[in-house]
Length: 255
Image: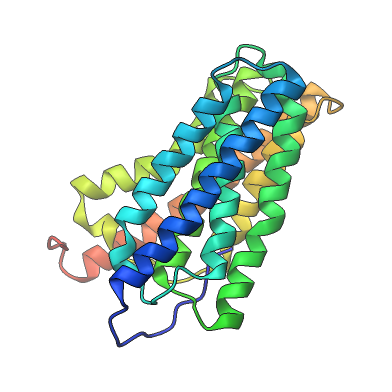
């Protein structure tokens, strides 16, 4: 759930902030590696599973730490710590997508994803309660959600719940960002809408439910199709809003 955005006027202590963020991500890395190693032993996964999960979390950590310039506080914050915990769990789901025996991981991936979704409301609530909500926290939260949706869409395909078309749900966010590199009007900040939060939650819940072994193929396919259509609608609404704004400004380039 996205963090609400306050107005911040002072610059944070960057050295203190970076030390705080690094310590949180080191703990998250250790957690991801430990959980992945335990999962490998319990479910007889490939020897590369723990290293894949650790590598995924490592990339998330590097990107997050590289974006600390947009963080407005001296401390990384408890809310962002919860988001980092979510990222640790998401790294396990991502690592599951490349496992040879991926069908046997569907239930575990679904349960882990539901846990990530349950924690999604906690980070936003903590940010607002502590007065440490920020654009950085909202973006961090959103990117973790986007990575989870991508992993779930790949799992839905690899487990035979849907065809490769379902992966379009996972790459839609990244396609939107890539399009913004070519068309600057797509990079303008969008107005806050609860619709986006609701659609994201629906994506995770629908895809997680579709992975459950007891669900009939038709029910799983219906859930995934409805989720993809809803996500497409949400992106269409936002793109239309940005296009109308672009035209209202005379169609000029927007940096």
